[in-house]
Structure formats: structure tokens, C-alpha cells
Amino acid sequence: TCFPHRPVAQQLMAGEVVQPESFECVTVYFSDIVGFTELCAASTPMQVETIGDAYMVVSGLPERNGDLHAREICLMALAIVEAVRSFVVRHRPTHRLEVRVGVHSGPVCAAVVGVKMPHYCLFGDT
Image (cartoon, rainbow, N blue to C red; front, side, top):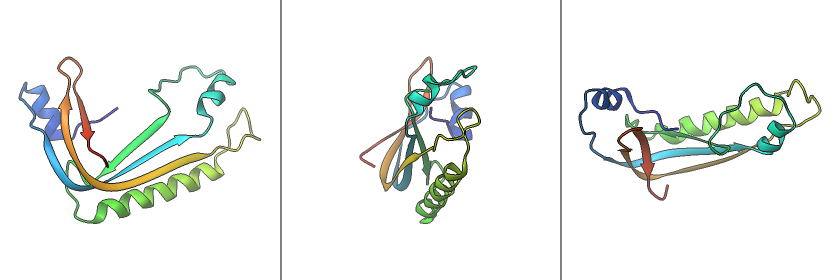
């Protein structure tokens, strides 16, 4: 799910057209929990809502932050990896949780897609 920046959300609520915007360099983080689907299938969660099992975070948009985007994402990625290492699944304490992480920097275009259910989404090879 893409969460719009506050001004974009305000524009949508006002019925305004939100123009696509290009960003020269942002950093994108992707991750997924290894075996998440199997872990959920072997559990009795009250509710698990996911779209796939990947997670994406971007720094450097919609507010440009100079060259800090790569540092922010990498520090976050390291913190997540460390937290996952020490995380204990309560109902399966011997299960070792693992996360796969990918980070890439480069140009993207951000745009609002959809009319009934608009989403702030990114496009590009990054």
C-alpha cells in the first residue's frame, strides 16, 4: 500500500488533480519475511491482511532530502535486520525468523493512480 504525502492527500480530498512528479534520486527498500506464508498457515492468527509478503519503503520523496535518502534507508534496514535476529515467535520459540532485504537508489516518477481507490505509487527501474 502506498501512503500519500499530506499535501497529496489534501489535494485528493479537495477533488484536485495531482500531477505526476519526477525525482532524480531516491532510495527504495524492499524486504520480505522468509517463510511468512508457511508460518501463518501453521498458526492460528486472528487476522492477517497482506498483499503479497513484500514490504517497500522509500526515502527522498515526496520531500527531497538531498543525499540523506540512502543513509536513512540503510540505517533502517540494519535496524530491521537486528530486530528480526532477536525476535521470538511466541507460539514457535524455536523458529528462527529471517528477513531478505534489498536496497537500490535511482530515479523514479511518483503519481496518483486510480479514481475510486487512488494510490500514490512509484514508477521506474529503481
